[in-house]
Amino acid sequence: MTDRNIDDAPPMAVFCLASVIREHERFERFLQLLQSIRAQEKKPLGFCMSIYLDPTLGITRDQLREHCTGLTCPSKNTHILWQEVALPQFMGYRALANRVSHWFGHPNLWLGFTDDDDLWNMTRVVNYENLLAQLHGHEQRATVSCVCIAQKTWQKRTKCCQIKNASDVSAALHCGCVETARYSVESGNGEYGDLMIPVALLQEFCAEHQYYVEHNRYCDMMFYKFARFYTRNGFTNSLLVQPIEQGIWTYFYRKSGAEYASVTMPEYSILLQPKHFENEAQRWVELLEVAHEGGLFAITRFQEQLNKIKKGGGQKTLITFLRIFVICAARQADFSGFYEVKLPDAVEKCMRIATKILPKNG
Image (cartoon, rainbow, N blue to C red; front, side, top):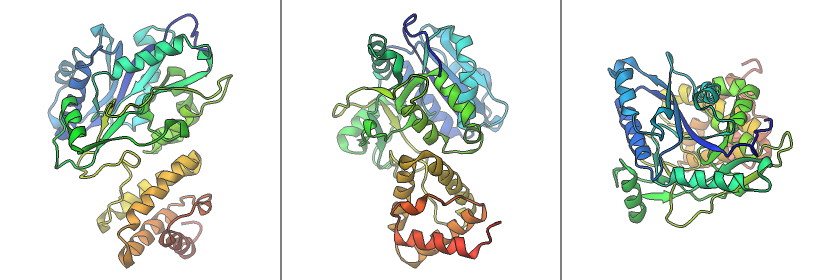
């Protein structure tokens, strides 16, 4: 990442979204996200989207474009990049990163992120802009690679409270249906949605990690590590963090169809029904790839997921692990480096068995 002319221009905060919408339920949650953006105390200066809209939904681009009015100030600063095919999320982000300078014409663009089923607290934009304002006056501003706000919330039980807007999230916090994130950003834990970064950093990541951008659904974990610990070209891994206050939240994060969701493992739940083994094995292959490249943080997540499944206990769980790892090994997943991590005994046994019973060529 090269010099950003930070002394010449104050940072401009632009939020971006890369989405594939195939179900009506997903579209409804997307509309709820848009409403939470319209309800901001201060509307974003810029918002851009990479969107694939499944034609079987019967929703036209004109209809979707109408739903996207009133998101930014000025209103012309809302941009939609239509995709003809469903792209992996970070391919969508890559496409946006290559266009934002042309769209917004600003020399010091910073990008924030959101998923299409998030909800924003009405202060989210203001909080990030305040952080960027602090950055502009910071004596070390030339070395800051990202700013971060981590007061995320997630839902424990979807059957308890129905969450449709930001007010519902605040109410659910009081009844205990929604909890705030419990992790230390300074320690390296977090989600890429917590960060706001210079556009050049996203472009550099996509150029260096093309395989993960195009093929791995856990690319967000690689990206978080890359952005959070960036130390190149004179940057010294500086980070500005918004202090976390009790009861305050920035965005609400949920998983469609899940009764329980976790802020640390929101998308990595393994379904134990036999019909899912083949599909879920591919998810594990990809998670193993990221963990192998992503260091301790990703490995910790991998271990958490194994511990979660192991709670089922007994022979059935052991057989489940065995079948998953057999498929992973058959696909030549790289297990090297994981033996240094203390994994549950059942998992270690499965990994040893899977490695022994399959030929090295898969």
